[in-house]
Image 1 (cartoon, rainbow, N blue to C red):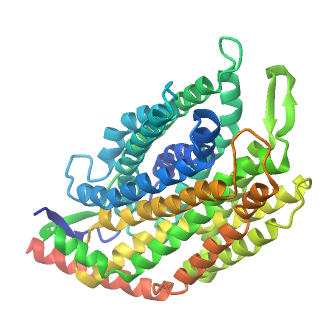
Image 2 (cartoon, helix red, strand yellow):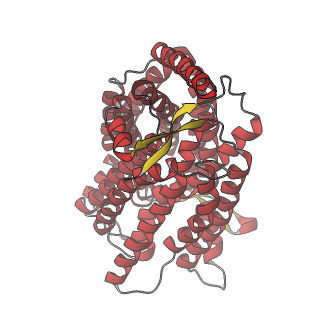
Image 3 (tube, rainbow, N blue to C red):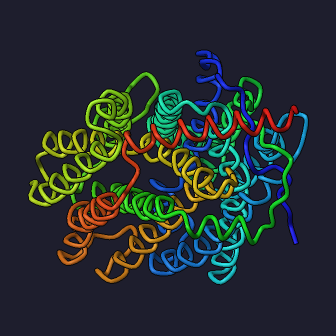
Length: 481
């Protein structure tokens, strides 16, 4: 049976305030991961249906099958990283070890070999499954890293804010550049070859992601070192199953990602097949056309960055739980309003996209910070700590939310009769509108219901932190006597 030799934490009584460089370095890690996350969530469904030539319903089923497996893989990575011991720590080494495979498999995922229909489906299943596995191998340890860089609640929220700002920055880079870069690369050698364009664009983004992961590895440090006490994997899992805040955060995290993934996955179809125009403006010097969907994505990411920066002042004023609840209520209400916008009123589309993205942006740094709080709660309750296993919930919730949202996106397109690269029926257009309005609003409502049950308010967390500090001090004295 696997054993965790490092469970109950002994920490410096005062963890020094994190330097700006270290917070920036930590942010680079999510910038790298988010670049490909946005490529997947915004463009992969479209890539498979309109570029590679796989039906939407088949892609939806593939997303369900591969992502359920991948979500189940996350706790394994959490357990593995908890039991990793190197001179760099437990979690940082995975950034170094996995960054190159991450980039290579990312390129392969956006490659389109000339295969028969069955071969295309098999290729998509294999490459996408591998991509999600390497994503887990680098992202679960990365998420866990925050829990051992500092044990100060405010510093964690600050660190999480930096993380989210850089995450949205990486996403913004991809969403602003993806379609223009694909357009440029597609014209290499004359003619128009979008398959080549997508592949070379993936190469470019992979190189940037590898650099960002390396900077994250180089500029961060693990400070919280557990004592060498043995606990079985069975005990770690038992502790996790009894961690009620963890379960609630799992549900709240799934709801947020479902909200984002179904809106993001349907957006490009919304402009191409419902608004019925894509061209926003043309840059003659580069012979480049900027599309309405690109502007929509860029506005959303810019608004989300602002939302992330608002998370700390709002959380300081009304608490993490109150901020999350307020933001998701606003997201749900505005999403319903989105349904009633006329297709020709692009200004209203962009205004609502800005406001919705601003609201949802405030929730994500809070979720990550609350995962660290749930790890403290588990240690306080059980006298054991398994940071990687607890933080695997963060990646797991992303995958489950993304699984449900992605699968629903494909299935709904199939149900409403979507056919790639042809004019859509009114029924299909109605379905696409619903996927940006009422369906994500249902996800927001689920998030509100989950967070309403969350038990860790600021007063209780302060008490837990104080008792943990006292317990660690006692443990240190016993160890040194």
